[in-house]
Image 1 (spheres, protein in one colour):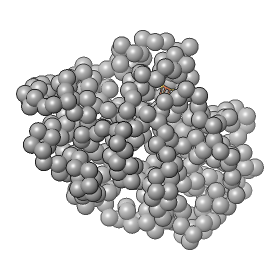
Image 2: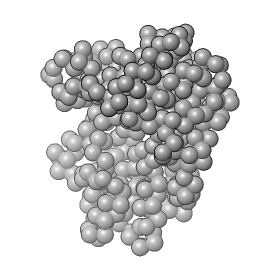
Image 3: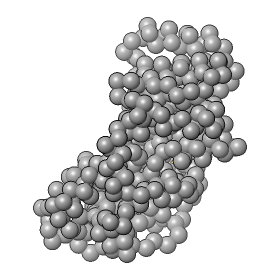
Image 4: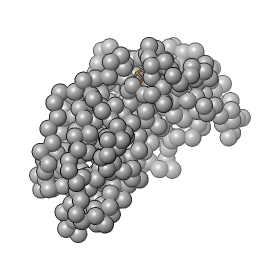
Length: 369
Ligand code: SF4
């Protein structure tokens, strides 16, 4: 098991930021790190342990594999059973359990499921295998969607007919708005995702600040970036001045990447989407536009999946809403480990359960069964 880092690359500056946070003397506050990459970095550098007692860091819904609903996983599994299909996907999805199977089990049963690093790799497979149907499983937020849209546009331009996708893409803002509107969930500030914000721009959070009076700071992924983001949030809370700030100016602007958003808009249209454990959220997903329906595998192969059965005892929904720490799940480290995951939060390299298991020395002493 990997242990946590002991150094923060600039210990003196980190110590000063932490000391500064202590001196602000805030009342108890809960800050949500939206992005799974933040969750991993926070666990890896033990930043939770360095916080003043009054600051609680809680994980959010920003791990794309984790929020993919069981029904979507079942759809991916059904796609793998289409005769002559090659399924292409990012690696983490393979081990996520569906209602009765997983892509890993389907590989063992002889289905052709391959890990790729980009949808353009999947497109290349389609070029090289004209007699096969190559289906790419599209999972992710605004960060990855532009490359999937670009693959579809390229397929149409080059008349590659044996390529299609299943769009389980999601957009972040409706989900954050739903969480902030839920009276059972208390979030005092958002550590906003750096990667997604490169595309959507920091101004996209204006509605959250305006409607929910929630401080938002777009933050990078180095430990000092995260400490800086937390410090800015703490100041906003102390001064009662919620606003949007960018603590990741080397990558994120106010307006984001308009070209990337235009590519997404050309291929996809907003649609309702199911988020694991959170439920159906209007306009939080992306459906393939009718103009590109040839590239929509669900329509083209008429994939229909029955209602899903959720993994028994898994509390990923509460973890993803930030209302339960992973170790409070009875299965954590017992029935559910990275080697034998029950829910996706233990599978994904950005999952909160996986992060706690990997880096928390008090928890990862539990052994794999
Ligand atoms: Fe689900 Fe496993 Fe996390 Fe429990 S520990 S919430 S079963 S992924």
